[in-house]
Length: 327
Image 1 (cartoon, rainbow, N blue to C red):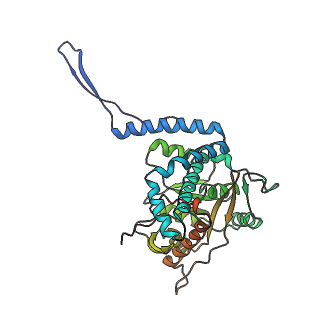
Image 2: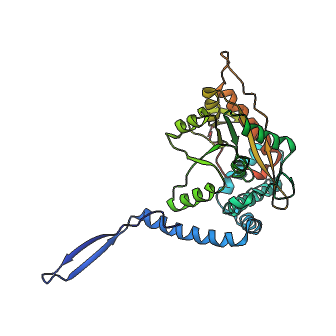
Image 3: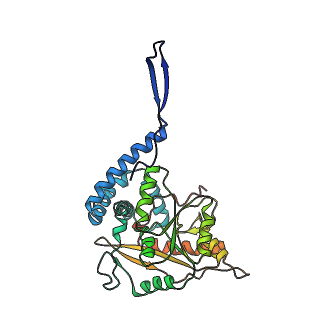
């Protein structure tokens, strides 16, 4: 891949009467310089991690993150949120979860560059590789692939949250995945390049993307959304007994297009393995007119996420400021 951005040089020149150059200044936008060096650093790190293979890179980066991460400022957010969400846990238990959160995040980073190679599920020899399914989960994927109907998949930043989209692609589902592009152009290009080899259509989230999402569903296709983080301007919900705001997007799309919603996740297992989970159609609350109730449906989706997190709190991204009510 070439450099995904250009650095332009602007010259100020002054010449003597003989025509010789007297001085010259080169002016570079600071953002271009920063992006360029970040791009160089990231590409170098990626090359090294790719050489290790998925398991060794997951172990290495996860181990480094587990040791260094708890000392970083974001860990304060995690400790505060965990203590409020699990008041019954001791300080030692909270600290162990924080270490696990960082390890999981490091593993996701180490695994990301190997994303196209991560999927090794073989229907003829199930549960012998890195990925395992329950028989019903495998059936559901096949049913959704063949029914010709639209559906929405919702997931959270849980375990390796890239794998649900990889699972849909591997099972032949015509799925579009919504993602937020990094601000650094070099890193954004790397992310898109890696995901393109493991997923179907990618939709960069912006103010116009909701129209693209609606079109995907109207065409009878599938849509993947990660919707567990705080959403300014969202609908109020209760999560772990505390009020916060959540994205109403899945519920609103389900209401407008009248399509089913399924919750999907990967669960991290020992030995660099994962168990994929896919729910039956969620029975979302409806209003008096029979349409999906946006607020109540958003709460129900969040309740599913909370259940996952209670099972494996160290596999969720607690480093994000999910609760922002200062009262």
